[in-house]
Every structure is written in C-alpha cells, then in structure tokens.
Length: 183
Image (cartoon, rainbow, N blue to C red):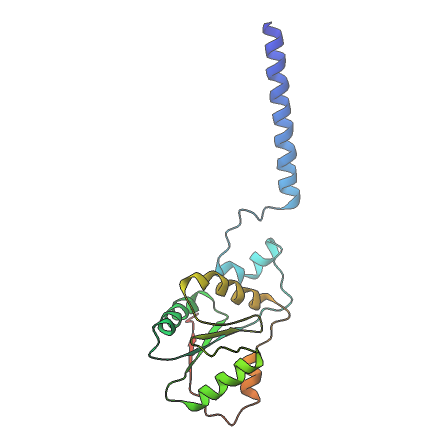
C-alpha cells in the first residue's frame, strides 16, 4: 500500500514537472509579451519595440479637433479632459475652435460637419482623423477617445480630414488654440 502511494505521488510529480517544463519551453519559445509593462515611454523606445515585436509601418502625429462654445459646461469638461491627457501622448495635439465671437470658426464647423454628413450641430464637436466624429462629451467617452487616438497613431490609413477642409478654405480667418504636450 505504501509503495502504491509513493508510485502514485511520484507519477503525479513527474506529470506536473513535465507539464512545467513544456509550458516553460513554450513561454521561452514564443516570447514573453503578456507581462511586458506598456507605457508611453517604452512604446516610443525602439529597443522596446524590437524586443516585443511592436512594429508600425507608420507612426502618425494625431490631431484632435474640438469645436466648442465658451458658455457650454460640457465643452469645458471636454477641453479640460484634452488639456489633461495631451502630455501623456507626445504625438497628440488638440486644436480648439471657439465658436462664440468667430464666424469663420463657425463656417469651418459647418464645412466639417458637412464632410462627415453630421446633421446635428451641437457642441462640443470632437473629430479624430476619419474614424471619430461625435457631438457631445462625457467621461464615459474617454476610453473610446483614447482608443481612437492610439489607433490613429499606429494606423497606416490615418487621414486628417479636418486639415484637408482647412487647406481647401484658406480664406477663413480661423482662431485656433493649440494644446500640445511638453514632451
């Protein structure tokens, strides 16, 4: 009986040891990226990219366009949010267009809304490339906004639609505030 128990425990030990060696070998063979700490600093670090097989065909600077009204509390919240995150993403800049007191900023708003077939004309109006254009803001949008920004940064298909609209309307006397990180 004692020999049987020893044989059973020995069999279990050998099974787990074999399993551990197999998993460890797969871990080494496939590379460990699951526990890699991803930060803004090491995403930009070429050594980190090579070690973790992070290669982008094209890293883009990303511009967020924010059309706002200075009397709008939701616009203020969106403005504060972008002011706070701009330092976290060195490739990000936010161009802010105040609509009160500047008719040409309003004209640009209308042309951009037309470009995206946006029927409702509310503020804030936030645009990121050609993938995110939405009126309104609340903190539940933050995760979606960050995803749109980081996706635009790494996408070979990123298109800055608003810059093209501005380029095609150089006669407008735009008043633009630019938020850019200190990086």
